[in-house]
Every structure is written in C-alpha cells, then in structure tokens.
Length: 265
Image (cartoon, rainbow, N blue to C red; front, side, top):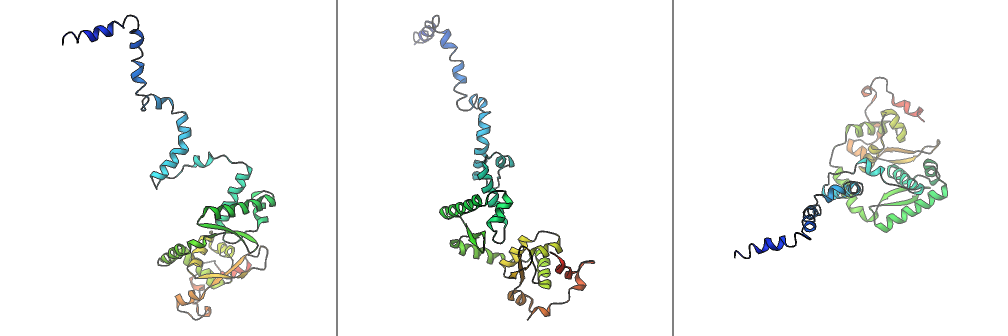
C-alpha cells in the first residue's frame, strides 16, 4: 500500500523533468478552458458578437417566454429594407388604418412610388395573405384596396363583437353619436372638426354595434362617406323617428353650434 502511494508521485515526477513542465502548464490553462466552455471564460470573450446576434434572438425568445415582453424600438430600427421593402411596409401601415377602400393612385402618391409598382405590391400582398391563411385578407373593391377580416373567421369575429356590445359606450362614443344623430348625414372629418379629435376608432365601434351606417357619399372633392344613425339607434332610445330627438341646443358647450358642420369642408 505504501509502495503504490510513493509510486504515483514518483511516476508523476519521472515524467516531470522532461515533460512535466509542459504537462503542468497545460493543466493550469486546461482547467480554465473547461470552465469557459460551460460559460466562464468563453461567454466573456463572446459577449461582443453574442449581443448583436443575441439582441434579435433574445428579443424573440423573450416574447415567446413572456407574453408581456415587447420588442424595443431598436429591434425595429435594426431591420434593413430595400426600397421595395419600405414601400411594402408603408402600404401595409396605411391599409391597416384605412376605414374605406383606398385607390391605388392615392396610395402611390402617398408612398412616393410608381403606380405600376404599387399595384404589383398590392397584388403580391393579397396573394401572400391568402396563401398564409392570415386572419385578414386584402381586397380590391369599390375602386380601391382595403383589408377585411378572413371569411373563415366570421364566427370568432361575431362572438367578439357580441361580447363587446355588452359593455357601455364611452363618453367619447356617446359624444360622437350625438353629433352624428343631430347633424346626419355627416362625414368623419366633419365630426372630427367638431370634437377636435380623431374619431376613426369611435366610428368603427359605433358601426360594429349597429348604431351608425353609411348612407351615401359627399358630392364634394374626395367623395367622403356620409354616415347616419340606424333603426337600432332609434330602438335603443325608444324613438319612432329622429324628429323625436330632444333639443340639443341647451346641452351644448358655450360657443359650439352643430349647424357649423354644414360649413366644414
């Protein structure tokens, strides 16, 4: 037993004179090399490349792992697009907020591209949405282009809208509805001019609840859509016709006159 014990040290010393110096120095780096492998030294040397590549990756991973996570603005700025990509992105953004079909020439003028290129991109987008089975589709209708919900999602959309009808209208929605009711037919721009705020979202809410609908187009430039209240609106208020609406003059803020709407462009 004693022999084996001295033997090991002896054997380690035997190789020691000629080769031990080399073996003993490798061991020192050796231990640190293994530890970096797991993440000690290696990761510290790779942080520079890792962050750049990891930023996008880590953002995506963060979103998947945490529903409350959101990509930082830098993630959007870091995306590189060519001219066609920028045009495509701008077209999608416009179509997302448009509440009526937008003619291709108007889109081309806004994004600053040739009409032929814009029309080609619109057709490509419509085909891509259809192939990918998105929840929305892009359609050419009424002389323009507009996003619509996918026909197959009708049941889900109707369930969502019915659920929303259970909640009460906001003050903004009630004010907008009052302006429409007393000055119909009226355009969104005219209502926005009276209220001093954008009313696109409120119009969508009122239309989804069946309280307002399109009643025609304005004969002026742009032929903006005219809106009016529906039969459901009268039923909600227990009225037979609009003549039974109570006088609103006494409820208006000082200096506000709904008749001014007729003068709005």
